[in-house]
Length: 296
Image (tube, rainbow, N blue to C red; front, side, top):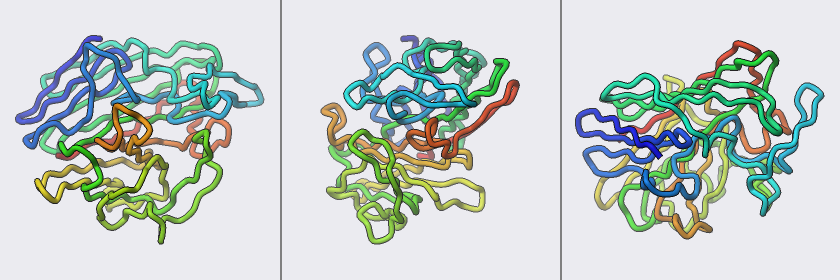
């Protein structure tokens, strides 16, 4: 896969044209992503772009405007379609400067998703850190369902995330079944998933979506991760179109196993194509943009 590097002062990021994903990102304090070798396979969704839906669709089946669609079951062990259609597709490099690059992909109609989208992801470095801006434009002749997300695993260089201090803005946690499909929701208050005040992750196993996010005056929700020993830290922010956040400690994955924390911005929760929750309806010619970033 073709790596593309951008840099700004002490910051460096590498993205790849296969899937359009984020391979690595480092600042003064060192590497901040548990990424992947651009010459090797991408495992556990590392840095991948999740469009035209994030997370899962139950049975890979949904209805839209009265028509039933069946997607390929890309998570066959759970009988789901997972993480969209572009993770293994070839993207092309568009606009490029030393500190920024735009990757582009035209999603053609296919099984279960007979719609046409032009997709673009801009990766940019600045004094404020890394920003990732995703835009989808419906270039077809009928409306289509859409959602987006991304799957970065962040690290502060520790062997495990247990000793790290996490602050996360979710006031509501979605409860899911054994297939990863949401079946309910509850306030995080007085549960082990309440990280609104900074506290150690400890032994908490996270593979949960959160919503009802606390936001600053600028409309951004923020996740903060700190290492009290080294005093290293980072902040991952999400703009308003990202109304959901998945946190994942990777316990069942041998190549992750709590060595890093996935902080996944999502515009909608799992199964949104079936439930309609926060699903974006893109009319012909319409575009949708969302942004997230990391401040080292």
